[in-house]
Length: 138
Image (cartoon, rainbow, N blue to C red; front, side):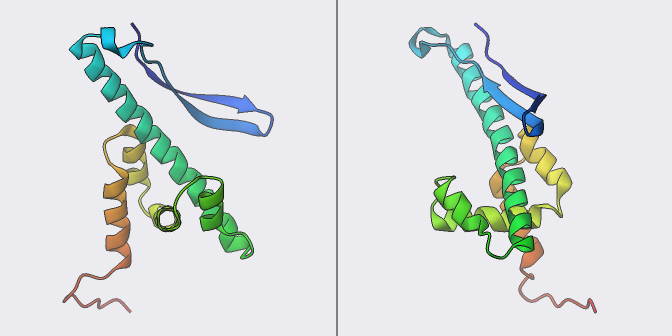
């Protein structure tokens, strides 16, 4: 049995395609050992991390386009085409806008060393001042 998460670069009709995620799981999970089942869970975790990072990169581009063309609405695209509820789409665009300040954290997200929740905390900390702490930046 092979369980793998692969990432590759390839070229498509619209130019270079960054990466794709491939997960191979057994067809019948009832017949696998506990160790193999645990390996499935780890593979899915790795694939989810990569997909989260890809989604973030797409949301960054949506936000960039919205900044250039105010008639373009990133939240609406994430809601209608991405199937996200409104609040989740808004969180995703805010995270995308803030994550450009944390490239190492985005890389850690893709590798599974950091969750999207952790990245959201970093983004919130960057935006919201700590109560009781005055900024002396001018």
